[in-house]
Image 1: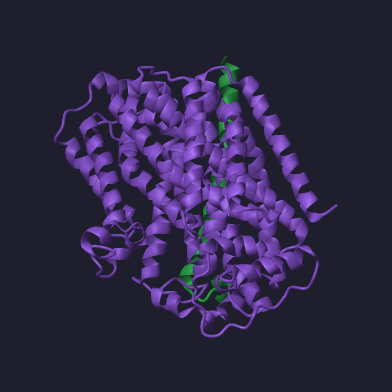
Image 2: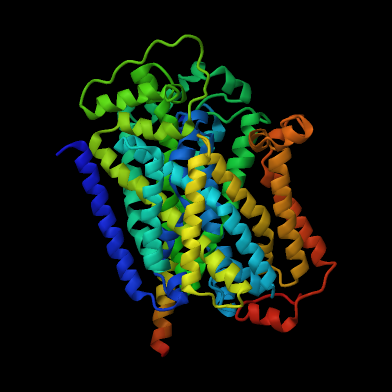
Length: 49
Length: 563
């Protein structure tokens, strides 16, 4: 489990590094999910016109 | 080809790209909406890159990177705050509503947004006045960051670097308007991402890998200067001691001041209104988060890791090395000439920890990395400075031209010429400040500006988006109160500014009014923002509502509860 500390001497700093990673991954997942959904919505709207 | 010639060629090619993009933007700019909001049709990639590039400046890379070099990786909480608040919360919860309400009110700038939302031209003037008064400070510290780098890279006079840099940027902002600014931001943003990732990779490689580099930092704990130990520092991979002076600086000024203050930055908020729908903002979240972590995260990691490198090569930590600027310059010259790095003169006694933090990153890069990396990094830093400065100058120009004089001269649509005049005046003010500000102020100046914007604007801005009940009187009290308390705290309570400015010493014979810990180390925003929010809420319930018809117009196509 010490690998979770990423070589830091303090768990709060290790937590900061992990928090950054999860924030970025979450943003990427959000962006990809909405990219596809918004494309579908846009195609539907253009189809109706 | 000499080193100097290569760098000048790269800079020349860079400027050619900027001129090309600005000219294309100039041809596509036909009216104030194009000049101020890129026609409200920016692509989400361009918008996100422009937002990120405007947000991340040399102050983040040079200033805060240098702070990480001095104080360690406790600063890594700041990139997390930047992503969580500055991208996710900003785009999803602030951006979408700002775009819709801005379109409903035909607002083209942040002061115009607040002024029209609260039906008050006076508020528009006050907002633009605050922006124009305080933005030159942030502009100046970004200029300093870029100029310090150019000073070391090209071995030119610092004052010349400040002036030349400023003139180049103002020219392309004047020519291209918001479209030019955003096209250049997107191009330079790509350079920034690639440059910072390369820098991080090379730094870890130089230090033998990720875990090895972190363990080397842990071994440096005995070298922490006694003065920093007293401030609360416990190591470059540890948080400062709880409730210590340094803990308050890191948490209240840097993490909260910049991390939350980003939400109320006028030059960033206006970018939400440049896209054509909320969908673009969803997509922009992905791009924005990647941009922030690769630029800011890399800068802080490299800043902290530079200590391990300086210790390996010279037997001292980064902040100690940059104390002797003459030796640092000598070492850089030797590196450029391809000679072995000289050894520093022997030093007696413990490190004082008083070196200029703004020199840590430039000196580290010049000495540690291969020369070809310096060329890439030169472009990266130039990009970071130019993108932020262009955003600030454009915002300042529109604040003074379109909003301030546009309202006073009863030209509610403003004029492009007034805006352009404002841009030039903004540059002059910033250059003068860059000449007179002392060293080591980049990070603190940035935190100050972010804090003032948060205290003055954030409660009113949140109210504008989510609380139809907020009254005009409440916003006046909130903005005025937030600003007054920020300035009062800076002048009389927060030692970092009050001791330096000296007014408290002059009037009361002491550097700050209350010396009891931790009061002198609490950032002004920590006090002013809650006070501003409380004023907004309390005065709202004591004052007259805005007309229902006006609120309905503001919130057209937006679901709101009856207020």
